[in-house]
Image (cartoon, rainbow, N blue to C red; front, side, top):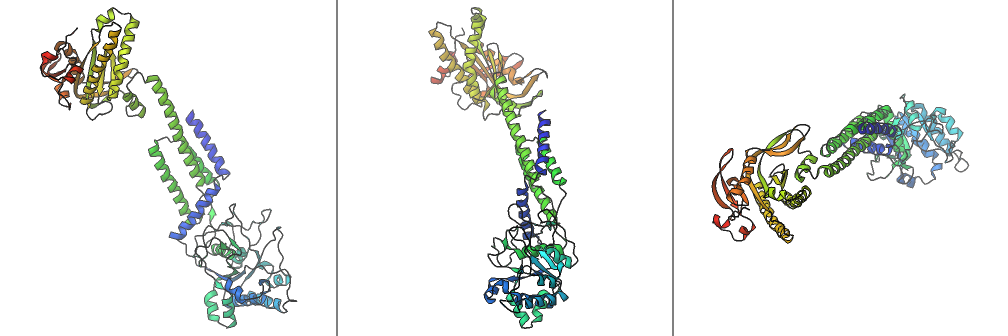
Length: 598
């Protein structure tokens, strides 16, 4: 139910998120990075170049009049460009709405002559703009008449929400109606189709420019060779390249003469749009339902629930692959927005991992509360971590098996009520179980007053025999402390016997599919149980086999007891340990160390 609910939520969220373009800012930033990447490693060459003639600081220093009185100079430029063989000429300089002949007689005539002469050999487009109020700024009618009504185009480009110019679209009127633009009209003059789309900033090299005063100097000197070399067969745009005027943010720095320019002159943006229109068209964004479908598919990743160590590297590969495919598509003039799908994929995979972690932690807490007292911590930990499979069967391991039993337990229980017996056993187990666990042992089972523990399974230990031997000696010391407390209450002392044997066995779940328990079986288990029984016969609290003795580093307290018969098994060489007092004054005389078996 949770899988269905979570998947439904993410699919609906993905569709909503993508349809309303919630990640559009991220898509635009990715688009900018892709343009710069393509431009750096695989720039697109263009056949039909656009030449920019710039109004720069040097020009304004030579042409001393106000720019609104440059009609004669503009007329010379138009005649120079057309005389040099320009295919089309664009004037990204908005002409005034009135005549200034009263100030400079003959000034208008110089521009009018330039317009009329230029249009005979080269199509001409004049820029127009709008006032801050949104009203179109008019151009002096004489200039419009000379150029023709189809020679006007708005020097405007759409601006994205972040102020960056990325698109070319003539639907820039208030009500979304198309209006002729400067770049659009220039393309139409050359018979090229004009559509809307993203400006391909990866096309062409950064722009250079020819200063206007240089063109005028060529014209005044009759240097037709320079003019033809600069303009023959090319589209020509005249506009401002001044450092602090008419500049706009763009995804790519198109300024070839200033690699650190923060913004791009407007004339270069019109020039880049015109480059696109003259060389294969603009970048087209794929149909809107494709990004929506990709986001929905990304939402389905909520169904995917591998481990985090697998999920996140594969997610990273998928993100890089998506961005790479989108970049390749952009190089082919198709914009495939993938930011929405990437965001949804990251959210889906991350939330599923967080959900899995939360669910697993809650389930582990529940299992610990429910079963923590039924199995040893090592077994429970392996079950929770998935190392210990719930299926029947086992794994062969080398381990040391410990069996312990209370001496005289039958006679003790005869004189006590069941409640007193249980309380006594719980008191005893409460003391020895932590000792076994502290040394890395696993409690396999409680058998009345007896304990079976395994050292080295399910978790391996550096030296299972040493761990079992140390745990056994600590159990005997604790038993000695317990007897002191029992004596204060006039209770009978407690004596225990411990048997240790080491070898290979099978560790795993034993029983039926409906009811089983973790155990360790094999000959090693049988021998360890028999050795615990021998403690009564040989009179030592702890009896271990040679297999254990040889793996104990400090073995001075162990006394060799020779080979002894073991029921159902060939004789086993055993060693005895009398108790904590033997640690203090070790001796090799078995008779001195023998205990009286009460």
